Amino acid sequence: MALYITDECTYCGACEPECPTGAITAGDDIYVISAAACNECVGHSDEPSCVVVCPAECIVQG
Ligand code: SF4
Ligand code: SF4
Image (tube, rainbow, N blue to C red):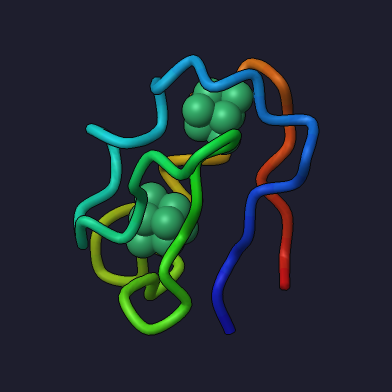
């Protein structure tokens, strides 16, 4: 399972540097998570790092 970013994304960019696997990139209108690269932060932290920092609470389970 991977997480994904909804249309509520405000394009703030806060999540991108927090991802330990480099799964988050800037898309055309919202940031996007590569399902192949996201490991839900297993082995890095107890919670998904991107979810913790997202001010719009728009990163959800796929
Ligand atoms: S859950 Fe972790 S690995 Fe997946 S996109 Fe968010 S920060 Fe990256
Ligand atoms: S932290 Fe949330 S609002 Fe900001 S770019 Fe990432 S997904 Fe979008």
